[in-house]
Length: 405
Image (cartoon, rainbow, N blue to C red; front, side, top):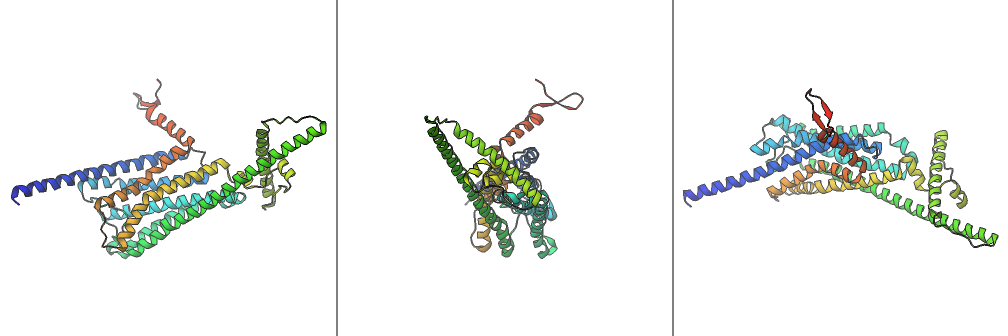
């Protein structure tokens, strides 16, 4: 090989490296920008979205704060380091960025687990919901999430010289979570994805089961009420010696009556609980009294724990958010486990980079999910966009006033 071939080969490798570095920098910039802006908007809109139950709204706002922190302190600094191929912020900032990265990820998934527990109590044990799932307890639990997660990722620093454990990864393009100790990988894998995933799976199973039983009982009650109404009409007509007239709208009237009776039952339940402090029921077990007063089924309790449709929608949003989280973080967790326990296995550089930033991209996916599934969230997002981006202009005095066409 002559000198000319060596120069051409070197130029080709340099061009490939420059192209890959540019593409990597663009990916990091886009994800960092989306994480920061989406969670800022998400936090503002969630405060105004009353369609989401209060405890859930608080947990989702906490999740947005965790993701925003990850975007600002862990992802955004990587834009410059990716462009110049070296970490310029020093070891101290690297430790802070990595601890924030691990803490934010842990708080995010456990916030989803807390939402699942909240919805489980609201639907399966509705009469005990307001006593068990108070906002004060919710805030205490979230505070414990932050403290315990921070201590988990701070602890490895105490085992390293000069308290420097985390390091910048050129492959992943960030100073993030590092798995120098296999036991650390095992512990975090157990209580972050495995334990939280188990909580989500178990609570969602019981929620789905309770909702299915509720729908079945509601359907059975409606059929029995319709049959009883029809038979009463035929019996009355037989006594009067005429043919009965069955109005097709009777079914709608019966459903309306049942809905009103359920609301009446809820009021009776709340009054009885407030007066006695016990979980008694005022519902009669006989069919006639049940139709006249209230229904001793799960749906009457759901009204005490929150609006029925709102609870069911919150569960759907939780399920979609949880599945999205595990899809985004699953490849990264699997790759970490493989490389930690089988060092001989070397994964491609591009694969390690993509799985890391796919996991980081999960931090802006929540706003997309809320926009699709909550109409009030979309409406508030559109109003916010019109107010602060489309319908505002600067006046000569420097004040911001609404633009009038």
